[in-house]
Image (cartoon, rainbow, N blue to C red; front, side):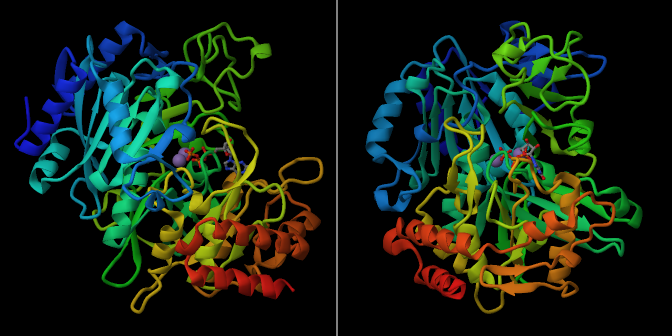
Length: 582
Ligand code: GTP
Ligand code: MN
Ligand code: MN
């Protein structure tokens, strides 16, 4: 088989010449094709069948133990001018990167099948969607791409119509961490990944295309590609407001996207609708509002900590047609991870008999892959080609101290500064130390495909006549008390904070103005049925002036890292806040 697009056929032929696969398979995305791939993976050990009674069509994949997360130190943005990649990215000269990758790819698919995977990021008929083709030698990647994107014949038809697509080449290689690179060539709209089978490194439609390459395209074309969930909040009057929220990896996007309202809210008629849990593409509509689509078709979520208590919607979608990566298993073949309220692990994520002395049963970055349509709160609006209008943008991270539960930015420029100066404690979603506070602008530190200075300027450029921009907020669900316990109950109760935000959007809630932003008074947050001490809530909503002064100094230093690419307006905004703090 081949396509009607010579550019695609030529590229596939040139990759085959380089990598020397035994066979080439063009993926059509059909059920029959998937069934054949599953059979193949069950036979070669890539997949293990889970309990068919409790979890029909569910499979476990155990990755190489050295290949369990994104590898930021091996991820590069290769632009002609290093300044275009910026200090926020690792950079390599494109010619050098190509030479290095060609050497790795030479003959790497001998004895393997090369899969050609056409995919569409976003609803197949949406003008906001973009297409790509991933070539891979991993059937596990194909099976995941089928869930995570609109993959196969329809995507190929759109690519043939449009004539252009993002080229992604992936090989698991030898899965050797010393022979592993994730390369991006935004000027060529291409991605090359070698030596890893892990989601963020190998499912090229996701972080590589939908964030790094798309953010580059978005800047040129006047839209935004962001590491954000999209959620609809329906109030008892039936009005739905859509919120987009950027939190760094493993900081609560999937949880917030599938939030279940607290009992009192449910009775009153509040509903929560899931549009997306990781990536958001937004562009101005004719009415000046930002309209967003979720470019993905599935969820690649963190398993540990997901339970009937924290995320019942996720639990309800995980009992059929799902792929689990690096979770533990019970004696009767059910998936198991830390935080589950029942069951017990018999095997750990590496397939050894479970022994608590060897650490958790599931890897802390164990993941599930499942179609979005299986989520009980998934809304048809997520399939709307026009996208959903965004009423509020939220930035948040893990900050044990200083950052209050919620604050509202005074205006767009202040909001962009709030996003740009975001910081968060690192998590297991990327290899490296966990729990270190680092700046992570808009939760895009690992994902912006170009210089953050230019990225901040692009964000500011949306503030222009005719635009009706969303309000911007900052949240922190992760404040800790002196005993190291979370002060805010979080999860479903986060709706209490969202309610305040949306009432600010519609002018129905009060706030106190402070130099760092507008904060609710404790009485502005609905605490009915909430178990929290008044003193704790007051502390969560207090502004520590001395702490913020030090923070503002650190932010000044950070903004200077991007030199003259940092917009003057952003520095001026920071100066105003610092001056206000005295
Ligand atoms: P990626 O998919 O890697 O981009 O991460 P994510 O932002 O989707 O993270 P996710 O929702 O999977 O949350 C990861 C961790 O945060 C889990 O351990 C959750 O239990 C925890 N978490 C989520 N929401 C809350 C909250 O409101 N409070 C507290 N304390 N923990 C939370
Ligand atoms: Mn993510
Ligand atoms: Mn997630």
